[in-house]
Every structure is written in C-alpha cells, then in structure tokens.
Amino acid sequence: MSQSDGLRVALIGTGFMGRAHANAWLTAPRFFALPRAVRPALVVGRDPARTRAAAESFGWESWSTDWREAVQRDDIDAVDICVPGNLHAEMTLAALAAGKHVLCEKPLANSVGEAEIMTDAAQAAESLGVLSMCGFSYRRTPALALAKRLIDDGRIGRVRHVRAQYLQDWLSDATAPMTWRLDKEQAGSGTLGDIGAHSVDLAQWLTGSRISGVSALLHTFVSERPASGEQVGLGGTGDTSGARAAVTVDDAAAFTARFDDGAVGVFEATRMALGRKNANRIEINGTRGSVAFDFERMNELEFFESESDSLSEGFRRVQATEAGHPYLEGWWPVGHGLGYEHTFTHEVVDFVRAIGAGTAPSPSFGEALQVQRVLAAVERSAADDSRFTHVDKEN
Ligand code: SOE
Image (cartoon, rainbow, N blue to C red; front, top):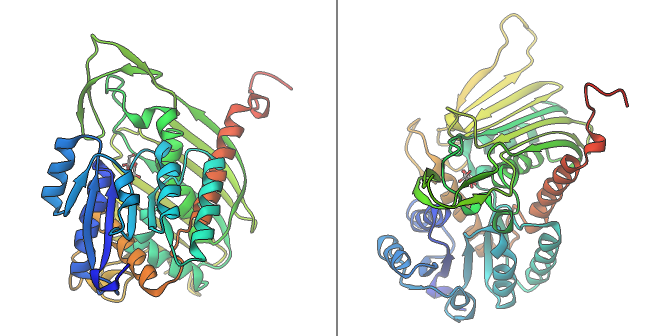
C-alpha cells in the first residue's frame, strides 16, 4: 500500500449508518488535520440503484453490490462495516485476513462467541500493523469526552453511581412495519443491543471500570407487526391488511449492575418512550461531584463539584463548544454547537490518526467484546425466571 495514494476506504452499507459514515469520511479531512489523505474508493450496497445513487451523492469513486470486492481489491486500505450485526463477523474476518484496517459498527457482533473470534483476529492483525476499531460513536461527543476528562482528572472523586437511560420513540406505533432491527437473526437483540449497548460502552469507558454482574428484565410489547409497509425514518406505516411478521427481540431492557470497582449502576433502554427522540442520558455520581448528560442537549454537560460553601454550590451547565473542548479545534468559533453527525466525523478523525500513528484505536474489539459480554449477561439474567422475585409468592 502506498501512503501517497492516501487511505483508500471501502464503505459497506448505504442505510442510515452508511450515510452517517459516508458523510464522516467526506467531512473529516476537510475540517481536521489528518496524517493521511482520505480517498473514498468504493461503496458497497445490496440494491444497485441505491448503491449507485449513494456513490454519486457522496462522491465514492466506484460502487459494487458484492462486499467481497472491498476485501479482494488491492487498492483498498480500510473497510468500514455498516450493516446488520449478523454480517459483521464474516466481513471483518475477511477484511483483516486481507490486511485491511477495519472500522465495524456497534454492537461488535450478535454473540459473545463471534465477538471473541473477531477480537482474536484483530489482535493477531494488530501485530502486523493492521488496526481495528468498533463504532461506539457517542464517545466522540465533545461534552462526553469532556466528562471523561473530568472523571479521569479526579474531579468527581471515586464513582459510586452510574445511571444510564437511552430513550427513543420510533417504535411506539404498533402498526409500524417489521424491520431488520426487530429480527433476532439479523440484529442479535433489540433495544438492548441497538441502544443499550451504547449506554454500557459509555458507562464502562467513562468510569474506566467493568460491569461485573447484572440483574435484568427484557420485555416485548408488540410481538408481531405488519410484514411490509412504507418505511418512514426507522419506523413508518405498516400494511395492516397484509401478512404479519413475528418480532423476535426485546422492546425494553432494564437492569441493575455492579462495577468491579464497587460502583452500582441502573440502566434502561427503550425505543417506545413517546416524546423521547434520542435521549441518550448518563449521570455519574462520585464521592466529590457528579456529571450528567443528555444527548437531546448534546452540547451541554452538567457538572457538580462539592465546594466549601454548600449554600452556593450547585450543578453548572458547561457548554462544550469552546476551542479547548475535545474535538472543537476543527469546528466553529465560540459556542456555535455541533450535531449528531459530528460524532461520526470525530470517530473517523481518531481512526485515521491512529492508523497514521500506527497505534491501536479505541474502542478496540476487546473493549467491544466486554460490552457484548454484558449484553449476553443481561439476556441470561432476564431469561431466568427463578431469579425474579414475584411479589405474590413467598419463595
Ligand atoms: C436506532 O435506534 C439508532 O439509529 C441506533 O442504531 C444508533 O446506534 C443510535 O446512534 C441512534 O439510534
């Protein structure tokens, strides 16, 4: 591979995440100093017309409906995988074996077994200079990166509580049509893996501590949906007079957790919280202070520090939009604020910088495997009714 050709990227996937990543690959080199130029070499999708349109609108140099092109072509250096979870392992293993750097969407896989194999392959590839990263994009929200900095600097002391909720409402309508995100075969799990995984990753990353045990419940409110219909956004209007399809994943996930440094956590995830659009919230309380964040106000971090004068202390609202804040060096002067898409741009910036420096990027597959283990523990706990204490029984 030649450095002068820039980093030649193949993107697999043209859906919501594919578009978010395509935009990030275009934007990152325009706003940030990167060690290598980025060449949008190939986009891959299942549908020819849609893939061609994606190539044209985002300026990809070529397109294909065969993902193997991305791993077989000698003129590709990095593969970005934005497809349902059941395809992650096969594509990742093929890309790493072909010597391509890999950015793989979250959750890393649909099972712990697959995630372990992917992690082993990533570690072996890393010793040959081939790098991989999992796309837990919210770590790249400036306000959350600031929270991480504050926690690492000891500003909230030792962590006692983690309180994480991820609330959306796009599945509230029981007549919205079936999609791959509701099919266990393709998605692995429902709300738990789709958005609960982000909370688990944020909690472990922010605290620097692993979740060591959970007690959980999962629930499915709508167990079948119209098999087809008009997709609008992620939901839409199903054809209620036609065939029905079984929903095979959870609609709601709730669990308590213990962290290995002694902290306790409470987690909730749902895509049926009417009115909540992308309320990815996390609050962490330590022995000296607290941080609190809600993605619906993504430019802000609430920060509390105990002070000597308890009558004048209180949460302060920090606007993470200033030049010295994480990732802000690439953007607008003073206080103009960022959006959802910027988190993906920052992800690409960090990935390309890691490749340039030859250092392992984070979240590594190993970190993503740990998230996968927590998701699996939540499923095991929820499936075991003997561990659920019924109010009307004494045993
Ligand atoms: C849908 O719930 C979704 O698009 C997730 O799949 C993403 O990971 C999250 O960033 C936004 O919501």
